[in-house]
Length: 239
Length: 218
Image (cartoon, rainbow over all chains, first blue to last red; front, top):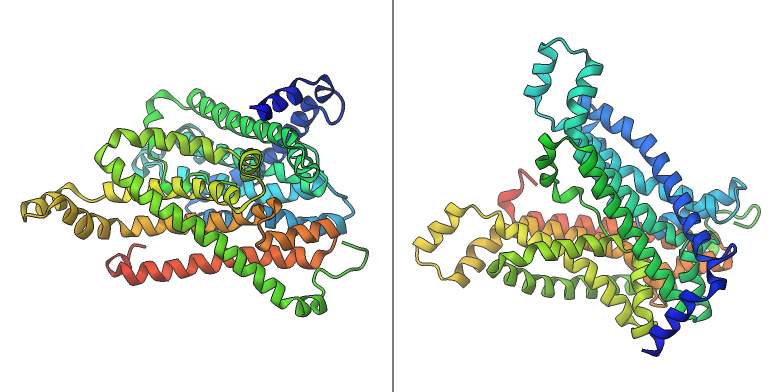
């Protein structure tokens, strides 16, 4: 009970809400890093996944990316990117974390977009071609709307993994909410540690919920049922 | 990390082989405990869900929420109550594996065709015999697939438990970060990835041995 009071005291202290180590700034840093990383991962992975799915080429690569993504421990990846970022003279903090997070975001987006486009009923695609749609139109008007739920699920998995792992950036002197956890551990200051963990958990769950809502808004009602058949393989995993 | 320092100093590596091996063993022990306890609990939970199917959706909901919580945050939430102990690490690790395993065990049991189940009941199998002789063997492919995901995920998560003082290969990574020394960092990272790949491969072989009928599809 006294511990919870300490947590509340820490959380309500005005000095923890202002300045560069304040909660708003740390949340901002966390979201900036995560947002930028998700954007870059999607920009890299989405066109490749859609192209592979549309043409049916490179399926082996696209599927195995999922297994690769599962095998990459996030801390190990961060560790390997630290010497790389330093040798490129990019310093500590933001860049090594960014380099570690982008590869975590690529596999779920690439694999899901490939599977999503590939699994569009070939009869429907043939019918669209038969009606005289050009390849561009087939992709935009037929394949992508049907593939949307799985593609968004892939982006959601990537986003949750990235927001979760961005926490580790504090280990290499980065900002973000991981700062409170790493400092709280180092200083044995458990209220700080606990608040940090709570905020990270809430932020990650919020991202999950927001993308769930996005999925409902962006997916046409007629194909909404399709999102229920997401494969066991393609679901997220703890970070 | 220091100017001109190579990624791996082989002298240091050869001098520290016993330490590194010790970290590998710690890593495997932490992983084994988590997956072992997780498997026992998941099996019990799946049997309960088999009897009361309505319990499945709250479990998958909980899984969704828990997966979104980063492991470091989950450990940090437990530390004020269980301290920097192996209990903190294992409570976190077991919770994650539990949910992966329950999902796959339940999916596996449910994937048994109703015809097969009816045939067994018609031949006079009791509920227990049905479970042990029909449903579990048929579900084994999906269950082992779940164990693979659980093992690979746990190997990755155990690197993080080093941050709460529980050893394993993450301790080498942490040492590298703290001392700005690339060698232990690279060794810890590479070995943890290698361990995940090796254990995954070993489970694929186990799966092929125990479910020979599934070789064509799996």
